[in-house]
Length: 214
Image 1 (cartoon, one colour):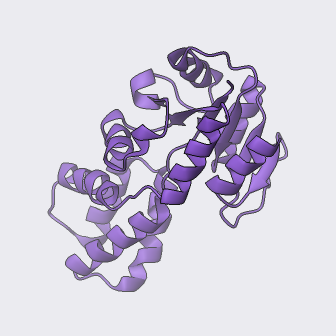
Image 2 (image 1 turned 180 degrees about the horizontal axis):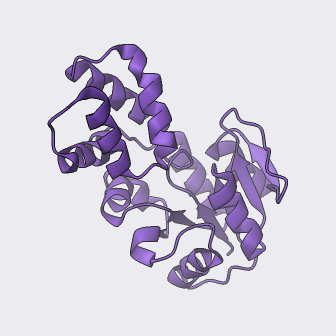
């Protein structure tokens, strides 16, 4: 029963779509032009920019008097409330589990936010466990977070696969710990010369199929 180590945002759960939807509503609410959505998406950097830095950038650009902490809460809760678990993703996880794989989420993020996403979307019903970097005290690509995931699942790392959309965190992390990986390209080309994924797919469902077939 090998482990299937899965990233959360833009792997198991679509984050890009909900962030754009939230951004459109937010910009409309403060009277900003809709074209500013591209700027907001750029500042967010796929969720990699610290939420406080995003909040400060929004306050500075629009001269808002909203406290940064309120904007941070809105970024956390507003985007999270729009996230949904794709039924086909749930089906793929169930098929993987039926085939003997043990799905475990390994994500870089804040405990409160990511735990809420996993539970509210119902993803918790389809995975054996999850490890969140803030709670674990270590982040991908550090191999220790993958070892911790195996420990939590009470299983060896040997034979595991890693699936994710981040070249550095997911594929770099898999390489560092000596595991095969599937990179979700999301319309991008692989450009890192230090390491490479075992497989490249355009979404979670074909990625799981590739692991099962492999």
